[in-house]
Image (cartoon, rainbow, N blue to C red):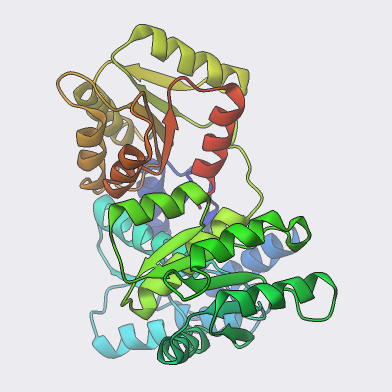
Length: 406
């Protein structure tokens, strides 16, 4: 979901509709909403925001408006370099397929039929946020290294990457060749690689061995590696994660899965920042001593807004109440083993809830072996922290959690 501090612009020539939409957004926890009563005034606000380098994260616009329709507005924005990536959600009373197709073709991310409820608005915004997260990726001019001993796999992967807009592909049939090329990039004799996709099982040098040798060369810098394999055995996945591989991909895969993995690798490669100081935390642990440790760790980082629960049931009730009261929690820190409802069950309930399913979750547990971490992530946990932890590791996990929030 969008950060609750995201700027949202509502454009509708009916003032009542603007008020209703703004009220729904406030109930969903958004605190930076603005209103425009025409397409022209909306465009002016968008241009001013871009000029001030404080762009809107989302525009919710009506279709039928005098002077400039919603469709004309989006076409104007798409023609401007500083506005062409602005996400649009169209709202309309007309349920005509041709209109919906026109909106999507023009560049709208989604549409919503009037009248709509808070739940329906939330669902559309979640969907748009997910689409933005998946499309946020490396520059189309990035140099991508592909290593696989199968020419057919290289051809298929190259075709997929071309479809995603990537053209600068450097392909090799073995790890040794790829390593030699990477070495040449450090001497300025070849173009620097931005991202690597390698097969696991190859003769002479496996993909994992290639990654480990690359890591030892400090001149290469940090390149995100995506490891592709036909084996989905947990021991292999654990081995790759433990080695520091950015992402892994199970063969055969579709282009949507490849796109998602590349986007995730991109986010992990970006400079990490801590969440804003007014972030609200839900802390869940059945031991008072651990609750105190978490609270003190957060206070040391400048945070003062948190709720402590002793089990999953109490946490779930408070999380739902937070949304009902329009003061939702931004991040949850939870123990694994607790009475009444453990951390994994709590995460499952959140992921199945329309309002809670995107809340970032940091799981803290004494069961910190790689198998448990992998299982927790499979169930929907975003980051895992083994007890006991240091202040520096705790800070690092919060930075990684925040990188997953738009």
